[in-house]
Amino acid sequence: MPDTHERSDPGEAAFREVFVAHAPYVWRCLRRLGVSPADVEDLCQEVFVVVHRKLRDLEPDAPLRAWLYGIAVRKAWDHRRLAYQRHERPTDELPERSEEAGQGEALDRRTARDLLDQLLDRLDPKQRDVFVLYEIEQLGMNEIAAALECPLQTAYSRLHAARKQMQAAADRERARRTGRTGAPSGGLR
Amino acid sequence: MIPDRDPPRLLDESGEPDLLRDALAAGRDDVPSEQALAGLWGRLVTPPVGPGGPGGEGPGGEGPGGAPDGQGPGTSGGPGAGPAATAGSAAAKAAAGAGTGAVTAAGGLTAKVAAVLAGLGLAAVVTWQATRPSTSTTTTTTTTIVATSAPGDGSHASALPSSTAPAVASARPDAEASAVVPSAVPSASGRPGASAGASTSAAATPSAAPSASVEPQPTELELLQQARAALGGDPGRALALTTRAAELYPKGALGQEREMIRIQALAGAGRRAEALAAARAFEASHPGSAYARRLEQLFPELAGP
Image: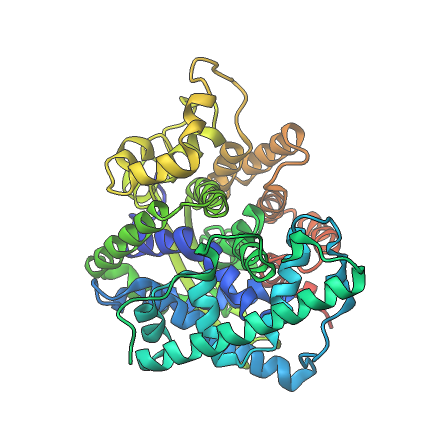
């Protein structure tokens, strides 16, 4: 095939590389930060448009993940604000569908994910950012503080508070389930 | 009061099954499908549009609006190398950290997407218009992304993460059919992350696809690569190639891409009425497709009253 196009550009190669290496995780992160399935592709696109625009100016030794997730978190914030203005409000009660678990042993994946999102929805948004980046995206706390542009100590405090609340909510949910089914199930421990 | 090091992650704790840990694991497994990522990439990078080609029929804002953006990055090649290296090491790190099944699966997915991108992203000058009211963008912004990958130019393919190579092998069982992708294989193996990627996600793939069995039938990806390359100069050939792709892979993973090429080929061949009809059919059968905006650029009459 003849080469009818411009020469390959290392900057573009870098962008592709970042996309391929990180897009699945940015997408996942946006979902856990409360972006709906219907909106996640749009938002992910917005993130990578910013990445494309700014990647060249990133210092070579800058922490790429912190930078990338920082963009994603800010986009998620904007999105949540707009979603809130439109109509969507988190509910206090967990929907009944989280009851569908059923299978005895482990929660089926989808139910478990729904439950996770319900629990996350009830966190303070700033705590949620830290919790998601640490527990799911597995960033280091230093990276998280850099991504969120907050002091490291603040990041730790938020993580601690988020964990406490998530554990408590999970405990309540477990109790509710065992109460409903009448017999404690080892799988739901 | 700052701890010396990060506390153990909940997911890394051992012990009996736990509701919260199950939920977190499910959250971590929740990565988008290959098609979803390819669709996203398609929105960032769409086919090349030459002057006089199908794109020329789009609204005036497209080419001129995007050009300055595209020029800037295109001329300064040097600085890009820095981020490339950074990204490379990050990718290697991610691959090396792939300890659990979930992450391994995600790595495999990444590899597959890389293969699709390596194949389809032959070259692109692309316009993206953000007009969705649901996002933070309130005004219409146009961003042009220039992404090029010359066929046979190994530098581009080699820039992809190390996991590309095995996935490419799996995507293209007829390894000697084209010069585009195989060039990625040797260069990829030289990258620092290569061993990590191969050992985690896709090490089994090359051996599973014996190179001895040569298949004359082109892959869906190859057909569409060729069709896309022919769009500018020979729309008739592009059309024929998409027809062939539709015959060989009626339910292929790249159906939307195939249809987009076909529509542009029709327009490029002067068969605008047919192109418009096909575009309408596309919109009807793929409501909410990532390509809808692109079609509306090509055919302003689709944008509604």
